Image (cartoon, rainbow, N blue to C red):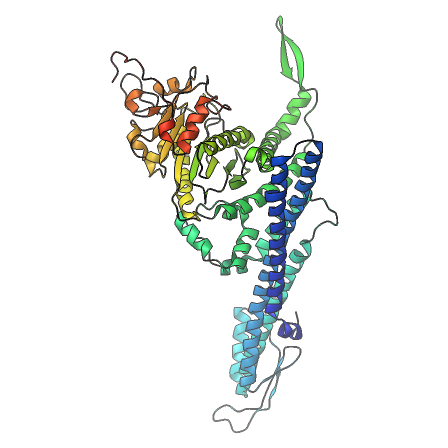
Length: 602
């Protein structure tokens, strides 16, 4: 970049352009919300049939276009802010050098060289002539030493001043040139295909674009207020509230995964950030999956082993599996979970189902997903459900639907607003035999659960305090117990279903008021018996104590399912009793008849 161009640079013009893109992004966001929150929701609530389905499909594409435009405009705005920040810093250095040169009686020429006037050193017999010097950017120890020597022997004292000005000008020009070269390809990359379809490739490109802008904008992002290191949810909330709108946009654009993971931030903000990550990862994973050869159709063959035939994998399938199998399964499983989350978004309005909020998301390994029905920041009643063994992103659909049913039943039971949350925020055991007997999955995940529960207080946007229920199923109850044991469980009620034990011996140890621990054990559920002989139970007295035991001190709610997975069946007694607790109507809960005393038991 030359001297004339840098002198003419107006940082405010680029910042105004950035604000313009941000305004366009805000309009796209408002249009997306109108499509999703009013139009599509209204159609789902009132209409059925092929025409309605076709309209919803078109509206979904339109919403995706607006979401893409919103995200890209945010990136362009942040990129322009970053570019203006870098060039503006160089211009301020140039302006300071030019002002100092003028004050010293020097003239800066169009090529950046500096002309200095005649002058004499103290005690000199005559005045030395003036001249012109050119600067050099950077400099090394050797070149700096040579310059100092030249200044010391030059008869004109203005020579050294002019050389310093020229070097400062060269440094500023080089800084601006480097910034321009860094930002130019990033800004050119921020363009969309000239079609009306936002594809997986487009969203994968958004992820690439964000990485490019993030890399180029390191200095700009570092200049912004940083999130508190290991901050509490209250600290996170205060940091976010203290940011200017353009600073919030920069963080959302460049670090959506980080913003989406911060407990304490407003639920709409976390949802916006995590939906971007979801769309980007879906595009990336779908493209990667499409690049992997499909598994051979002839997966199985029969061989004769001794006198009996045996079914085995073919050699072709085994070769494919060794090369691609693990990644293929990871990608297909994660995409299945992402599609389930999107399907929940698409059910908004159906049977009165409220808007969903994606409060946490991670596609790597077993995955993470935290999905709320209704805005917890304003809800009168909140319920946070922890699934158990085998829970992962690929299987999140069933857990999301369980909390939809709790929402619908609790909403019908109370006039207040309800938000039910599926919290897959930990690494659940993936194998009943090999993993679930160990407590470290619960112990490792419990602090994150406590932070999330505390974050629901920090993100509150109304003055009233909510009634909050912790719900656990199977190993999820063990995590809730570990959360109470390790810290303070920020809940008013606890519901345990199919529990193998909660790491504490009595209901009073679960950090909720007396009489606010509720347990369900269905007929034929084998998991509680597993707990009695060595899982999460405590207080040995014959078998270990678990929540289904009378001596634990929990209310034993009536159930009408069987086995380990029927606690959330539609229109069931088990579901209704849970929903009554969530809705703050404990007096309406149906309890199991007390058991007959067992000899030798306390």
